[in-house]
Image (cartoon, rainbow, N blue to C red; front, side, top):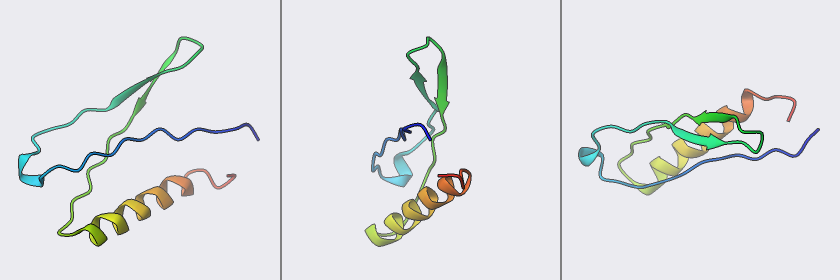
Length: 67
């Protein structure tokens, strides 16, 4: 299997301050581009946010069982 890369970004903001967000763009060496879907995780404390983030990452890899 070829070497893979995961692209992600994290920014912690007050939930009540968030108005909207957009998908990110990735440019590939072959000149094509791809979208990076943005996800919102909200929580009351650090542990709740971390738990949801880890579940989200686990679910992502469920899409690619061959990994």
